[in-house]
Length: 227
Ligand SMILES: CSCCC(=O)C(=O)COP(=O)(O)O
Ligand SMILES: [Mg+2]
Image (cartoon, rainbow, N blue to C red):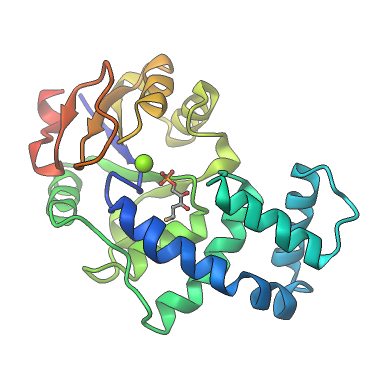
């Protein structure tokens, strides 16, 4: 019996193109000015410190660290420091109405149904928890953050690491076999399955089709009671 569902964002609840064509370019465009204006803020300084450590360049000045971050963006590196900064930059875009968080139309009805069935809902994304709350707080369907009992990002571990799913299960406080992870990426699902979780792969058009996981094309096809 499934007690909790943990969902990925990019390619699962939301279109990859929204993340890659809207969110990522917005963060790239505003990165340098955001850092010039906010580098002294404690949470920005902490993220910059983490990026300098990750790049093994503890002395990098602001221009150098900006270049490092642009390089991380080019690689789509799931750097915790970069993800924290992107989330801070996106806040303005959501608040000033430049964009809303994309949701596939099948997502909200399914989340609402599962929640009504007594299933707890969580998010696990490489995007920072703050960025996740923004996407669902300023979504195409309005603020849907009330649906979620919690959020996890790379502070709990990388999404292809088994240990991350063990840590999430411990935080949720349910046995792994009663947890369902939804993702488009088979390596993430492999790690969750190795941790004992149930898994389902979303095939949203251009998703990776090669996997040993059960596959669906949208959330309407998911019945947690039959898993
Ligand atoms: C919180 S939305 C932005 C998602 C993001 O930054 C990203 O790298 C995609 O990560 P995911 O783990 O959702 O595939
Ligand atoms: Mg994904």
